[in-house]
Amino acid sequence: MILVIVSVFNDDCFRTLNPPDENFKKSLVMKAIKQAIRTKRPNGTHQAIVCVVCDRVIIGEEKVCNISTERLEENRHRISVVAYEEFYRKPLHPLLVEQYSVEGLDRLLLSPRAYREGDNFECCQSCNSSMQTSKAKKKGSKPPKYAIANGFAIGHFPSVIQIPGEAERRRIVPII
Image (tube, rainbow, N blue to C red; front, side, top):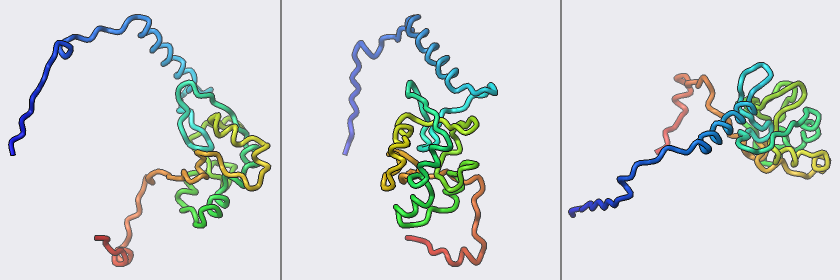
């Protein structure tokens, strides 16, 4: 079989691109400045804005909310390791529990990447509204839609991977 490739050119493919106008350049610069100001922390460094409940990066114009440790504790029955394990009827791997732990809030599935100032964490608007006190008091209520505790505990690769010893290697059966 012979394959013939035909290339069709028209006048459009030889046009040069015009540089963007000044207003467009200014709007891009203003957006970059706005984002830089938004991610600047009191110590002068910059950190991505991450929701403590769902571990998603909050970008663009999305509202950034603050959620207190008190409100997180009110929702313990919805975002804890125990709640996750009861719902999915299987234990959560200890490495995932470690990767989603935050100091002072033991056994809650939270993002350690979220910015914390005192007893307040940054939170996306969706999780913030789902974690309101009125919803927290409902015992049967589910975690927020995209919460780590709602099945999104995916974790990350550990910095050190344990290689099994000879005895463990003999027990590993290759899958063909």
